[in-house]
Image (cartoon, rainbow, N blue to C red):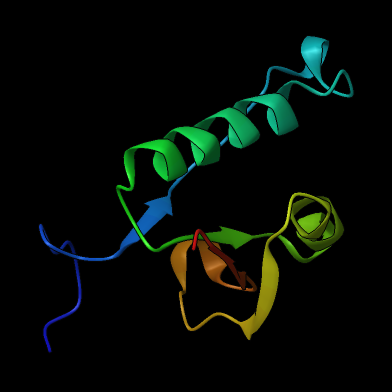
Length: 89
């Protein structure tokens, strides 16, 4: 199958989550991501959420329920990413 966006796909990919430095460490990123995931669950919009994480952020995403799926093949920004998945079912 051809990689890329699939209109009828079962995975929603979070491409970026950023909080301005002045507002970091206040729980805003977790609040935003939890809210988004809950909206996806409520709307039954997908079966899972996927994202790429810096290795240092794997524990943060794990606390939010994501599981580490190993080193990513993605080479964006020089690579070194970790694939993270959250099943919505």
